[in-house]
Image (cartoon, one colour):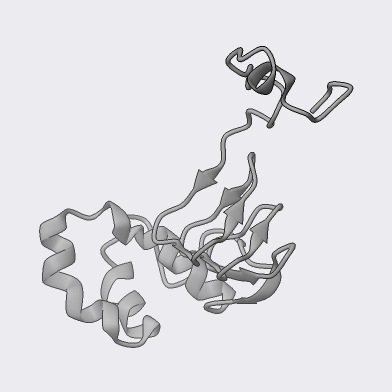
Length: 139
């Protein structure tokens, strides 16, 4: 929107096809795994949404969303994290979204219980990982 007018002269008067360059930033957005995006939410260009995040219905997301963070509003603001920091780190280490469809189907009942039980059951299967998280993701 760098022109003198916002009126679409090219399409309305001269019937030219519009040049989309410069209308919106060309930075791609990145959406993580297992993200829930509410109806009519808008995620702006260049925003990264972390794994396991939740974006409330109708939210306008203008800033990055951390893994397992819940945001809502216009502009979207931090509401809470879905889990404590240690559990977030452990879930990110497990990376269950990279499992085969067969393994997910077999393990499906464990997805519906307490997150602590899921972590206990699966964290030991992650090579080189203990019950202590590997990085700080939630502030």
